[in-house]
Length: 435
Ligand code: SF4
Ligand code: SF4
Figure (cartoon, rainbow, N blue to C red):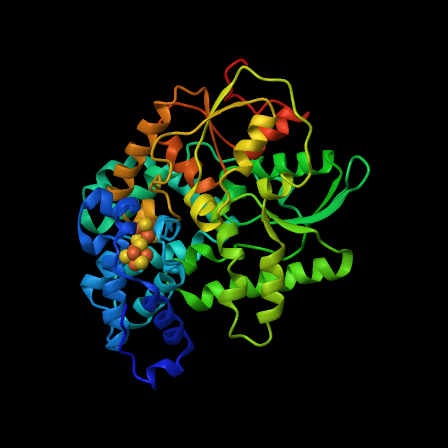
């Protein structure tokens, strides 16, 4: 694509990077066919190619974001299916990240939107606040339907609807410290505790730590780590996201330099995509660029790491698993085979739902901010999953677990919960049919 940025504009490294990305796009439109919002809405401006044109026009003309740009960029799930499809290697992720920062800096959203976004940014990344908010939401749940009928309160009604009925108490898995290998030691890793996941489903990291230590891997939960920054990053709140990234980089580099680390294990693929991008996010910060690149190189999804441990084949189990590949897993991190091979090796029968490339509509805070499109995508995803006639769903991202669970009666677990069970752990509580 031809671009017309001035030399002065290109002195801004963010603009220079976006110009390089834009020039790679050849307008072929292959990406439209796999874009969930284009498939759902049928509007070119809700396709990757349409959004690329909108971003180009906004940046080239040095314009503040307007309502049209904001509408169509906000509808983007950042699922990155377009990057998997694009034959020209267009880095849509970095382009839309830049656009979101530009929107945040130049566009004044309506009061209600500002309020909702501020609440999300102030609550979700902090487990203590998030747990309190969920407890309060439980009390407010009976009001959800009425709130959704009032335009100003609609989004808060959606939030109440999404809040789980049961809230687990804080897990020991999140407490800082070292979990020793239970057999001959063959590795040492740190594990991200994160923000929303330990509140919504602490059993995921508990299973990961049990499995890793049983396999001879020492697991460190470093003091001071926290939210990876993805939630605010996708809202264009650059400084808040970079602050989170710097804090985690400091913590993990200290852990790596004191006891050595083979990997930083992540059990939420949405966080994994962001942490693997820390090197890029902090590339312009001389104090952090090298350290962040080192952290990104160490970051591994739990299944990516388990695949290196050569786990023994287990007896076949009479249990069919529908594997839902989160967008951040398959498009963001390009991890497609490892989770399924691990599950098959562990004795499960694995089935792929149709249209596996399409997002379930969770996408961080998307199911709160864009509830209609999100609900359409959820219904499509659930229909495809249920058509597999599997006994259970497995996936590697808490956002997808929460989203899909509200649309089906099928049990849904994190992949590592099934693997922990298959390799000597307890059967996951209450959700499995008899094998
Ligand atoms: S990230 Fe997903 S929703 Fe956004 S343009 Fe690409 S395919 Fe479409
Ligand atoms: S597939 Fe790639 S090159 Fe083609 S229009 Fe989409 S982003 Fe541009």
